[in-house]
Length: 303
Ligand code: CIZ
Image (cartoon, rainbow, N blue to C red; front, side, top):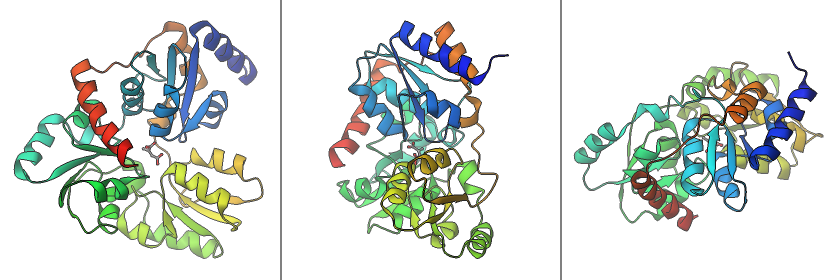
């Protein structure tokens, strides 16, 4: 058994050895975020890697995020911090199911949330994130949108656009658990708090919030706000950066169980093992990568 300092030291040594950059999603454990060169949301991380000369990107997050990093950084080797860190939401749709839906709605443009496999992105017209869903849908040159796979994010976008939205019935197990009752109870406890929830939450939860924001937007909102107390409706990992960047403010999770089991599979030990064995290499077949990148690039052009 090694202590925290020894584990951190080992990560630093391996980073040098591999000429690696370590990036960690906002939902990662605090000690993993602390050893990362960059923290952020999945797209932010994948894009920031692009300016870096690192031979290896160690992606502390879940598989679809590492795939996006591999697509945007084809000259780097991307290692995922835990072999089994997946995303049940991304797994709710595959290419076959998407093709069936496309046949049902031939006039619709497909907008795929970033929480999808590279193969599903490759079958889609546009990609979007929770930060830019409304902007992307409004800019798509089609009045009918097939939005996959998160129905809650899709519903939230549908309340902000005049486009006709067809929602695929996927959802995030972690965010969909949060109930309106829990939000009401938390608001009674902290009546002065601003309520920030993720757009993957259910519509009735979003209705009770002051804002529905992606993790990167929550960080910006909290920093710029004059408010001192916040209730947070997203995965608990975000509290680490919120508290670090705003030592004069209070942040409370709306519900204690707000934990994504896949994000929590990564530990300092799994990061070290991944780097030592150069394992969990994430690759995207070239033909899929090219088409998935087109959907990502179209989003980037809009935003
Ligand atoms: O794009 C991401 O990183 C996700 C899935 C959520 C967020 O809001 O950061």
